[in-house]
Image 1 (spheres, rainbow, N blue to C red):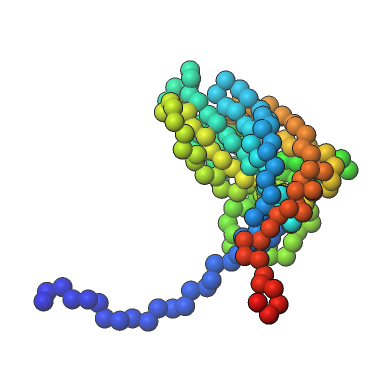
Image 2: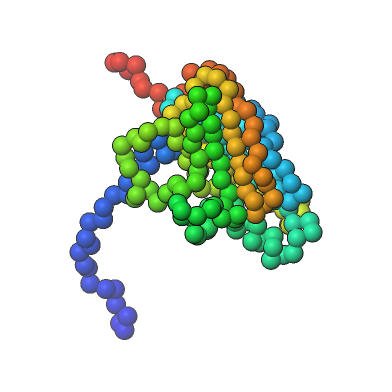
Length: 214
């Protein structure tokens, strides 16, 4: 035999991947209650930002955002650049002492008392996230999925998740988006914190605890 299996070797133990802390993502063991929104947050000839639904959990709420793009009169290169700019981790040069890059897609919330949270400057590397809860509120932009849709090849929809922690107060609050590269100026809409708080009471675990003695 010319080629033989390699001799056994001892592998060094790997450190377990850190979990996403509760403030950075929805709970893994809970099904949030869904609120149908149907909100259009912003729209341009090439971009539409909508909030089709909100999932309310016991610890916070997940604002589901659809980012729809279409090429229309854009060149293929400009359309590709537009789609790539939708991923904040692709944008470099975000510094505390300089204006935000036009390519940076950013979201934020603001409550009636003035408290505010945005996605600007967030870290996507879970190994660098503190496990202890930071001061709230926090708005975390979760990595998107691409929704399969029929129709034109020069159009697409990305679905983002905005995790708001802790649960918003039971009163109206603002959701904002701004994306200069996509032609979107600062756009603000109102969300119903009362309905989100009521829905949180309907959230259920995926695996309910068995009754005592069951």
